[in-house]
Image (cartoon, rainbow, N blue to C red; front, side):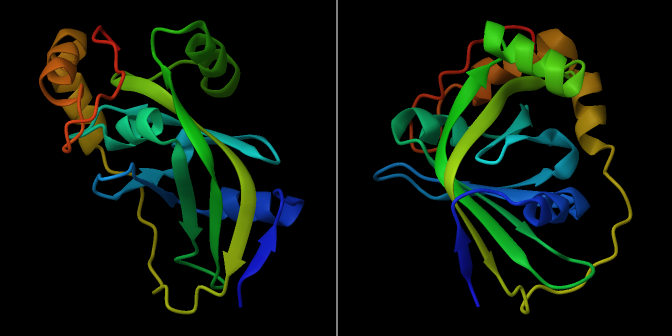
Length: 185
């Protein structure tokens, strides 16, 4: 059954670090709900109530738009190997643009450098951690990360990525602004 906590414990942190994937969910009033999968290597735990993740160029930029319009975000982890469990972090998020000093500082301290195509860092300050059984989550065998995103970014190059941002990432599918600054990221 579901259990709720005000912050991450050492056991929660260990669970997160064993996962290979997480999902983000966000929405704004009148918008569609967005759910996106992310690879765990993009995530960093800053403290017991804060996580960040690198957000790389993709087909849309819904989460950034929802953060500007509303700010509510949930991150979900689910065990697809080992003991079953689901964990959700509920809170308020914001986008930290590639052009900001905060982005540069987080990149340097948490990642070393930002991979090609990184358009922002998403930050979630959460006030609720909820765990549940995860009995309905099927078992999967992790085989590794896909090379597709790296290949796509390499093929586009910095100028191609900037052009893609301008064409595809400045507003959400519902027409909400994302706040993304066009440039070479």
